[in-house]
Length: 464
Image 1 (cartoon, rainbow, N blue to C red):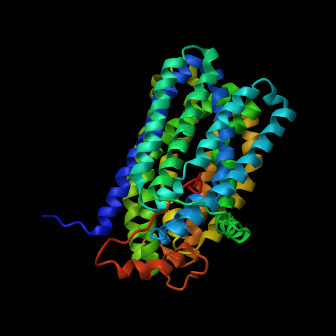
Image 2: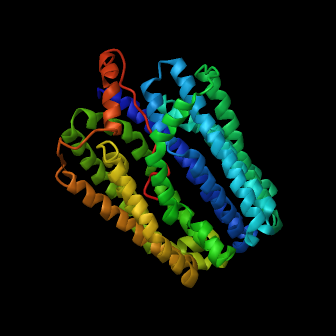
Image 3: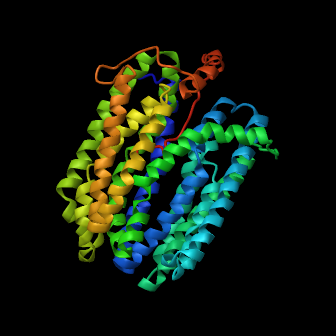
């Protein structure tokens, strides 16, 4: 009979629940997307996508770097209820402050930018999703390796929102109801997740000190900078296309992008589940971690290349089947970004599974910041002259450049993933690998009684 080690059993279990969540996260929007494009029309759908993209920018602000930094902290103190409560309320306080800051920024934009005057209610309803994101303590569940709560709560709320959307959105004038249904689903998940977290982890109120808040901000800073830089060229493109080229082009780009993200989402849970395992391996031996990442790189590369190639070859039929003849403008952007699942999957393995556990998060942050700043003018120019197609072309070029920069940086620091080797002299100061090493003593002491536990989440740091 095949024996599965406790560590591998935990890894497989986490991957199962993450796949359940990710499947719902991507399959539900892919089911809703063709319906919205056909019912609302490309222009109205573009406005919906534009408003949601704006809200997504504020979600990035409120997430800060907590989806990795706070997850890591929880994983180290999961048996200490007092520490969990302290971390919980510190993170929620910072996120709440960012939520209020976002409301001030949005209000100023709605009041001063003519582009937003005609649809103030639309953007306000879209911002409800930010509140839902702030309330849902994803980092807490991941740090405690309670993935099933994430899947059941988040997936169930999104499924309910999709059902409501199909019932209430029947004509182009219902575009605000489409946004309300989706934002409402996220708010429902946030409220439910917040309540379950308080009850499941017996969290008591803790008033965070200034020192707690400052430390939390410092630990997430580099991840926040990386996320912010990535938004310049990847995560906020629908917003930029809509702002410069109009709602129709935003609709074309959003339809193409969400199709690609649906394919990419099938691969994301593997990298999410593997990250804590690689962090512990890197703390013990970089050579072992490099060999493990090399194997991961090979099979994930193959797993992502096939759907990318198929999407590239059949972009036309896929777009017409999903969105209808009215969305022919999405075919060219889809062809340009069809290879992104392969590029981003490799990039994720190199960045999340390698650079962070190996103590190179500062170098990774510099890559994102440099690339993000360098991409602004080409991206704006391409959108101005070529609309959605121009944006898609630049995104592919930029993501490929990021991949090349990360690979070169790893080589320069003695990490050769083609051979599965790594220099043992890479500094661990301030790195997640070093943090993992700090609690390895606790893990190894109870290894004979239970499995090592560690968890973290890949977010906005993903190469996008």
